[in-house]
Image (tube, rainbow, N blue to C red; front, side, top):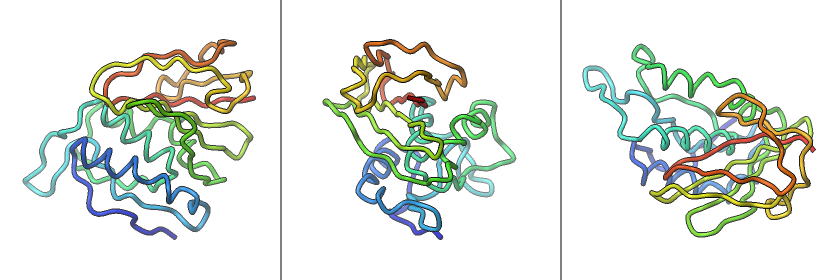
Length: 192
């Protein structure tokens, strides 16, 4: 029920981001029994046998990796040594709010609803009527997102969940205002 959409991934920003951000055209084909597979996830320690080594992706880049695959409804196939998971990698792989979005039964892919320079916002409809919203900073420096709800094609929500923090966030009438680190991302779930 899945097919590879890319060449092999490696644990570098150029490889991971090049693959992940190029998947939007195929997103419309995603759904139950038809999953786009942008290759295994290169999180945690990588390599095989005696060649296991630390990941070359920074922590923020690994969060972006997981956020991209989550928004793409991509299979979460791990390419790391499961016997050597550190606390950071375990937290990435076991965040209930994030996994729930990836595994959403509707299985719809995302759309890019806003971009400016290195900044992008993707949204994805979920089966309960809520919407996943990802803020991506593809550039190397911290950047502020200052977005009104209409800019990201959403009405002011009644509820907002910061998925990586696994906690409710306050809803501002004006929209979303967040600072995102270089090569970083944030993931929200909004209920209207």
